[in-house]
Amino acid sequence: MNYKITLLPGDGIGVEVTASAVEVMKKVASFYDMEFEFTEKLIGGCSYDAFENPLTEDTLNTCLDSDAVFLGAVGGYKWESLPHHLKPEAALLRLRKELGLYTNIRPAKIYEPLIDSSSLKREVVNGVDFVVLRELTGGIYFGNPRGFDDAHGFNTMIYYKEEVVRIAKMAFEIARLRNGKVMSVDKANVLEVSQFWRNVVTEVHKDYSDVQLSHMYVDNAAMQIVRNPKQFDVILTSNLFGDILSDIAGMITGSLGMLPSASIGEKYSLYEPVHGSAPDIAGQSKANPLAAISSVAMMFKYTFKNNPASELIEAAITKTLDDGLRTPDIFSEGMKLVSTNEMTSALLNNIENIYKS
Ligand code: NAD
Image 1 (cartoon, rainbow, N blue to C red):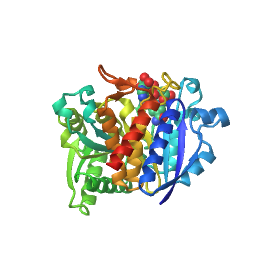
Image 2 (tube, rainbow, N blue to C red):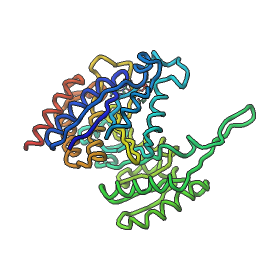
Image 3 (spheres, helix red, strand yellow):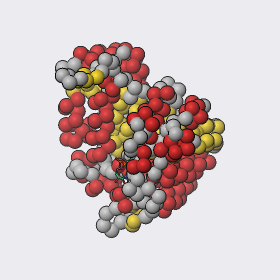
Image 4 (cartoon, helix red, strand yellow):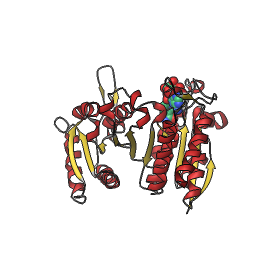
């Protein structure tokens, strides 16, 4: 199978971790009879420097003509004082919107060798493995009217039926690939828009009776994620609630350098580590490439529907951590401190060894 992949390394460590991700894509593709055609484009600060525009039509059109997009990270001190619409981060918002990426998927999965670096007790986090599905293109972040004056400020939390239907379907489909449980999170005891969300999710569920559906209020969900995170499989929620819950869920399982993400729409998909461009360590081969590499595992799972390839990458990450290799962000006493490149090389070896064993 041939696939077109657009690479957007972006700024700072985005460039370094994208290079690692590409090595992994090439290696894994070679085992599964897949061929990738890569096209690399500028986005963010580097694009502003070249074209005075953080997202050019050329970059956008290349993304629109690809099977998947991989993004490193954007931003940096240099571009912080630009007007809002020219900032590197503005490129990300526009890209997500133009590609119609209405679902954001953030896994919360603990790697056994890193359990002791979690802020929660070993017995609470051991075995945690769930995903947060956040609605990404609707809700209060986009609702009108919005604004403020001297006397008041206001936003509008609104969901249209088709917006809830499509993400509910996505949640049930993903649950079928996992452990078959969806927890829809809302605030239906207070908000009408949440009651509407709950009604629609319940209606969509009629076509997915093999999947177990439950509902939870968002305040309780925040508590349950830190109290007993093992109860979750797929958490389905709106843009605002998902913004907060996905950060809580991510952090109980470890460092920013370990967190992958996927944003998926009807036609397009984009994969990126959760972290930013880390200008404080850029260009020093100190970046942890595992968030980017785990995002590649998500790409194989969700876009190429190749679970064995995805599991191979995840197994190689666990093995590399088991071998004691650590970039500075996850380093602890007794472990082996390595650079971005050393971590990547060890991981590629582990992919090969696991595949051949
Ligand atoms: P950041 O994620 O870049 O860095 C926060 C801290 O975590 C830093 O100390 C950094 O060194 C460390 N860190 C992050 N990723 C790491 C990795 N892979 N390995 C090792 N250490 C890592 O967040 P920030 O400092 O708040 O933002 C820096 C720039 O990135 C800003 O311009 C911000 O707007 C941008 N940003 C972009 C994205 C994105 O592209 N999706 C996301 C967040 C922030």
